[in-house]
View 1 (tube, helix red, strand yellow):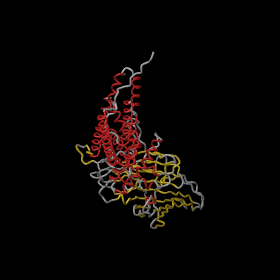
View 2: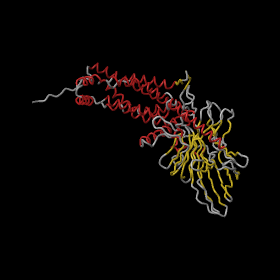
View 3: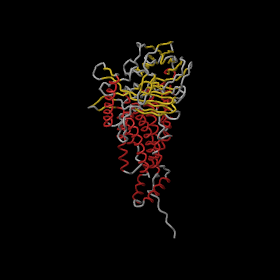
View 4: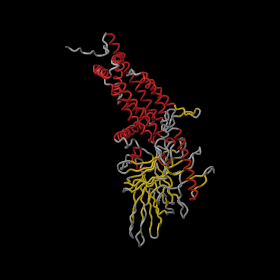
Length: 598
């Protein structure tokens, strides 16, 4: 029975870690295949863009830079700016849209002053108006005039048809806290000043282009998707590139969803653009966008999202209005939670499918952890110290449960001799062996499941912490001791192409020592070997995890060591007392069979 329970616990733990590792890191062979497919896609995009006349030479003339079609106006481009203490929005008259949104408090590169610019790597503006023609994006080209501008609001106008005016307005807030800091209020209006009804095909408003982040080299968090009032539906950049080991997917040029669109987003690991219309839209379009190759010459893909609106026929003298708000900023849960339509789901703290309740529970725990972690950080200032304090707090909350599990393991270890005798005595009769084992456990008030329960409970806790730390923009470039970025592995050197990460090694050592202190609850040699290899297995799975997550796991191991030392000291005291009194806890190997009277 103990063998079965331990095996189940180990299997579940390995499965959970395997899922995390599968999501976070693919194998080198898979990455090579993906790189090959990206290169092919890039070459195809270059050829197509050359035909369309939208390829330009890169500054070093080493390779062409492919961009989304720039809006070609009939007048010189003008740039206008609206800004507050955190956000600087640069608007262009080409399309009456956002050239780029600059996050003043978030540097683009660690150690440099230049701020991060959303949509800064493309000449195609965010919030531009598109048409969609069966797999082809048709940008609505032309220059707008600036009709008015104040400190917080700008209005663009352009004639799109004889007697028909398109008016586009943007407004920002000057508040210093909350979601409004990064929220842009927008309205697009079609005003029919002609004498005839005006019909307009569906309009798409482009959210801009999200680009991959260094901390997410496989693009797991580079998503485009939408919320329909019930679920957050999305595709990753990998879903467009195709490939895969088991479930092979063909590359896709685009994805179009028709649904009740409450809001849509394009995002990477730390930043997001979330467009929320005043009334639900009807469709969402997502597509990969080839960008300039990286420093190593590898193809880079961004991800663009556009939200589609059906426009009714506009009678003479009437107008059609599209009102919406657009959050363009960091993925900070405390800000996103203030929005009213579950925009915080872009944090992806959990999942709704296929695990339903468990995924929702993980999301709830992740939000709770995030709130507590931010509160602790505001007191201790450093995010590394906040993770340590948070870990200690979690372990103290679960201390009674883990203490009970440790006590159960201790008792089980003391029963190994009589359990072995039972196995020898009834080795030919499994039924009697189980009955004798259960009776022995009952006599000494031992629940074998108590040893597995803390491990099972820690799995969703670990997953929640993993998801929470993975998307928290606050950890980007956060320092702690030798760690320069808590969102990345703490690589201190590279030896023969292999990264040397200190924190996972410390985690492995702490886990090895913890398991050395803990008594073995089983006499099965195979299980003992498995447990000895557990630190190596964990080291393998967690080696390329973010250093913030591995820091959590290491401190958790240290807390387990403290608890185990306390338990062992208590055990030694009890054994000394038993030896002094002459009474032993384990006095009989197995219950005797009752003789039947004739």
